[in-house]
Amino acid sequence: MAAHRSAAPSGLRAGTLNHADPGALLNRVRTLPHAVQLFLMDQEQLFFRVWMFRDGELRQYAPEQPDEADPAFGPPHHP
Image (cartoon, rainbow, N blue to C red; front, side, top):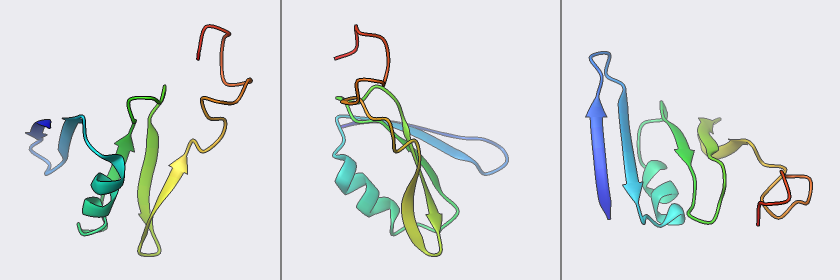
C-alpha cells in the first residue's frame, strides 16, 4: 500500500492510499479523534463518498444514491 501525507500549517492533514481495504480503513478512522472527514473511493467506484463523525459514530453522508449500478447514474458509457 502506497501512502502520501501532507500537513498544512493550520494542522489540517491530507493523505492518499492506493490499494487500501476500505473496510479496514474505516475501522482505523473510527479510532481517531472525531474531528475527521474522510473522502473514500474504492477502485470500482466512480465518485468519492464522504464520511464524518456524527453523535460519536462514523457515517456516510454524501452521496449514498445513486450508485454506479443505477441506470440514472450517468451517461451510457459508464459501466
